[in-house]
Length: 87
Image (cartoon, rainbow, N blue to C red):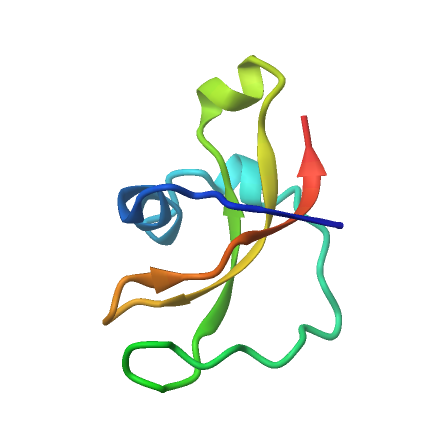
């Protein structure tokens, strides 16, 4: 597993939360058990883990990444991606 500084923009996370990348996020293997979620640096509440995948263009160009990142939706804060799948 590698750590990468993606996504670059909250809109990419919103796309995943809306289910727009389901065909890619469903391919990410379960991480069991998930480590404890980090604390949001802004509000100090626990963040939540989500499965994240880059957009379809990145997968077509063999630069796709998928894995887990922790998000705080109210603060729009996230951690770097823990990459589980590359393509």
